[in-house]
Length: 388
Image 1: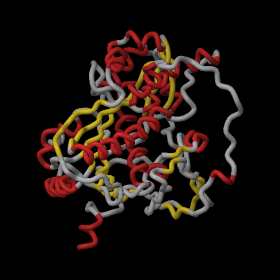
Image 2: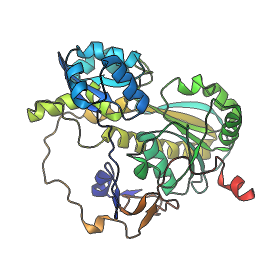
Image 3: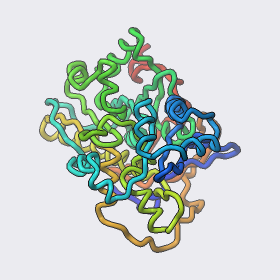
Image 4: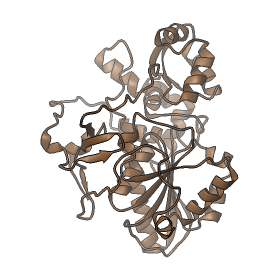
């Protein structure tokens, strides 16, 4: 593989440049950092049910000023525990030193970057072209992984429940994918899902640990339905330790593991300073894509089928393991040459997109499906759709 490092850094942020329209905001109005009585805490409220959970604990209206006043009456650890218990997504800020001694920080540090596990055997060849990838991921790491796979020939089918939406990032993460909707609480939709699962070569999923098990699709069931399938999964806070099942997103993990604190300390700032991009998401997403490629090669060479588990927190540990560095040099300034020449007819309007930084086996990316809204396609694989 050949990688353009400059473009690679740019692909850690928004890649789409709309023509005559604007991208929606990536953040809910009340998402962000708030000062508690004894320190900082971050609320992640992009999903309506996460926003409702936080507001129910705080007992206030969905207005930033009201949330600010309510948070200021809490100790950060107590508020974090209460919002988590209510089903929300939240993180109190820790320093790197505090995280290193925290039970979850210790658990994450003991985990491998990619947790490989043998799950069976198969004689399937290595082939990206037409590889069927069932995508059960959400913002942002998992969709980055499947977007990469779609660029090099994989047929990616993303499945979302009827109630889920991520309008702020859909123009970024749906590129190259067909997008269907299923309600796995309905018998007929479960039958459709199981048929899709049986026919998929790869399953990529990023639901919170235990969520698929709660729907009746734990690893044993998946292996029975689809023996020989490559399984790559993601969680936020690691697969062991007291927070293994906790809801989380990149910005929350940066608060928990000390990245936002370190940015604040190094800049002598009055509030948390996270990384300027969702670096844990993007880095983990590309690691997930690499895990799929590695698993395909391994299956081709030896017939071994493996699964791979990754987490945002473990990627964060890798990021900070080299210690703090002084940033030198001017920031990257985008030029017209950084944009791909073609116009992408997205579901929201025409746009240009940054050139992709990777050439894989001598081949540039070739996404054949423009970005578009969720749940607009039939829940079937292309061959079945053509036959119908």
